Image (cartoon, rainbow, N blue to C red):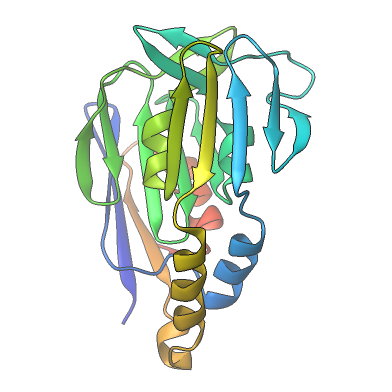
Amino acid sequence: MKKIVSLFTLFLVLVMTVTGCSAAPAENNSKSEKSEAQEIIMQIDNPIMTVDGADKEIDEGRGTMPIIRDDRTLLPIRAAAEAMGASVAWEEETQTTVLAKDNTVILLTIGSNIAYLNEEKQTLDIQPIILNDRTMLPVRFIAESFGYDVEWNGVAQIITITKANAAQNDTVTDKATDTSKEENMNKSIVVYFSRTGTTKPFAENIAKITNSDIY
């Protein structure tokens, strides 16, 4: 039986409800696990981040840097999210970002304190913003949702994102790989409702990054 991801629009705000546990077949999950960084280090006003000891630009060619806004750290999230093994999609008209990794899907909208973590509505302590044409999102909420610990060094203004319980996660992944073929082949389906067509490209993006069917 297929699991269902339901996506709909209400007063021009996208809301997503996720039921079930598997967003992609085990083969794809395995590849994602291999690409997960164990440690990501960023610094306020520094366009370079360190991923497992290797330096790289946070926003290639743009010089975008993490910032502090209302005592909270915001950053252009794509590079960090992809280092965590997640996929990122952006829907321009509704100014909504979706991040997906294995069985976790996060939905954030510019200017809104409401986020969605799978089927759960969450209240953020800071709103995502657009700064210099770049989407700036709260790093702690996203990292912890994807199973990472976040440490803040206020003196050096350094954010250290570390894979939580890496050894334990490896054991869980190994057990998941050993489940039955029928269970591993379960997929998700993205179901969307659109009166004007606005939601269609966003739903297609979600279906693509979660390896889902679409209806």
